[in-house]
Length: 286
Image (tube, rainbow, N blue to C red; front, side, top):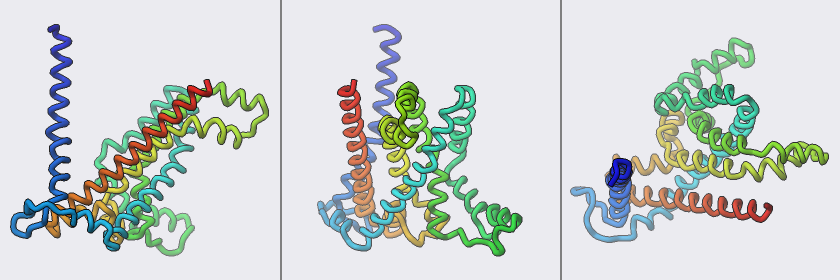
């Protein structure tokens, strides 16, 4: 066996060991725990039950899940409305300028998202930067109450997750064949028609990928709700944290985690199916 083959198998073995140890086994433990019974003395009792999953349809918990989906969906929509023009704007520049602009988009990743959330508190507070600027400009007469509102949570979510939308959108827009747009212009198509019939379908994979990359993390970013809204409207992440750390109901917390994982898996399968449909359509058009 050559040195390159040894290195290849060593790399594959190391990655496989890592995935089994820190992904597969922990998730299997969560799955098994979701079918066990809660016990105040030993955390869990090895007694099989479906009751933990039955609690998911309880109106109290269903309301939390529904609100989480609503907030994540609204966050995704706002990120798309902001991210698409931003990605299009970046794609119009030369490769050198694009690199600088993309670097500016990626720079926030260098700072922990929790620290960035505290920075948002400084900006949105009653005596924060935003209110100070608006007062100095004479736009408002009294400070706006932005903290501990749903608007603050949305601002925080969009700020943290916007790069996840811009990057896949930029990748799709960058690969867009400019000759298609030029041909459509030559044939007299309006900008709206060009966008609807050419740009939007060809960038749809980027839209779907970016939406998934925003929607899925938004479902579990409970600390943003805690810090910016005071956890007045808990998310599914808050519910999982409280069930495990406060109520000590590990089986129910595990069932919530499994339900969230299954929701994510369904969305990823749908993304794969849509990607296959788009590829087949492109092959038929060719």
